[in-house]
Amino acid sequence: MQPVVTVGLDGSPEGLAAARWAADEAETRKLTLRLLHAWPLLAPEPTHVPAEVGQNYWARRLVDTAQAELQARHPGLSIVAHLVADDAQNALLQAASESEILVLGSRGLEPVESYFLGDVSMPVVARAVRPVVLVRARTGGQEAATASPSGRVVVALKLHGSSDELLDFAFHTAAARGVPLQVIHGRSVPLHARVPWGVDHSVTEEITRDALKELGRALRPWREKYPQVDVADGIRLESPAKAVVRAAEGAALLVVGRREHRPGLVPHLGPVAQAAIHHGRCPVAVVPHD
Image 1 (cartoon, rainbow, N blue to C red):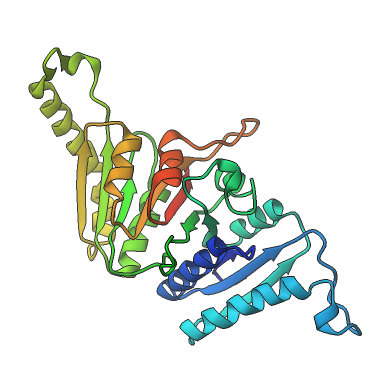
Image 2: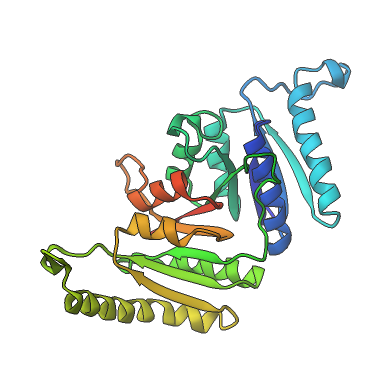
């Protein structure tokens, strides 16, 4: 199968915002865009029933309407439609395994259960084997968020364990868009650095110097692989979740990692990914890695 960016459609404003973002990203990456709508009650395409009275009429109309809009915006983009007679979560997880990126709509600050397709989005993000991007529709009648090439990409980095998949995705995305990449590492101030009047600056300065050295070593091979990417790195002495959300203000995309779950364990998202999804104002890419 040719490389694709897949977007899940459910007829919501968030789903349409996700489709617009996915179309921009597919064009930037020179990939095919696949529009996916899943519903267990979809019927095999009839041969003798008029389309307007067929069981799949509304599903087909939803996808066709989105495809027509996106094709008008991106005349040269290859777009394919895919209707799947399956549970949405199963269909999306399968689609993720076949895609470079899976894109879903998100309602942002509302409870987890209100995400795309009810409670489908979060389990998909936690279990997908490929990157998943969550996109929200802007409020107040504004144009939906898109993959505008004008904004920077921000990536959250832990500095412990392997993060190759995360950094490869972030650097590749910044390179494809021709935008700067900001690498953020948040680290809480340890107890021994706290004093009655605040913090011991000699301790925090040492922590910052050591962290910057670690960050430099982690980024060196990626700077060499992507010399065209303008990279800014920074250490913030606050909780990693807070540091990442603050750094992402005004960004075009926030990239966070998710450890791939071991067999037998319940898939889950860490605090940084949770904070990014719930409070980040820009599209959020969740990248699974070792």
